[in-house]
Image (tube, rainbow, N blue to C red):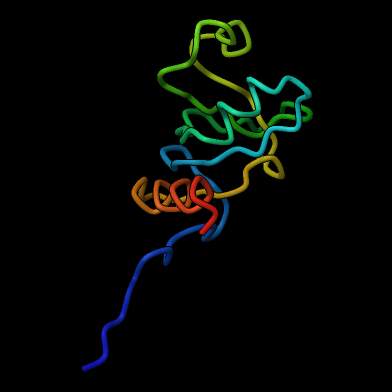
Length: 104
C-alpha cells in the first residue's frame, strides 16, 4: 500500500493574493521584530498596485506591545521578495514554523 501526502502542495504556488497566509522574512535589525515576524503567520489584506517598494499589506494578530508601534492597525507593508512562504492553507505554514522551531 502506497500512502501519498499532499502536504506543502500549495505553498508558493503562483503569486501571493489577498487572503493568502504568509511567513515574512524580516531584514530589520531589531531582533524582537525579527523574532516575531519570523515565527508568526500573517494574512494578506491588500495588494498595492502603484506603491513603490511595497507590494502587500499583511495583518498580524497577537503583536507584542513592545513592537506594536511598527504595526499600524496590526498591519505591515512588505515587498514580494520579503515573503518567504505563502499559501491559501494556514496549516501548511504552521507545519513549516514547527519544523523551523525544532530544526527539522
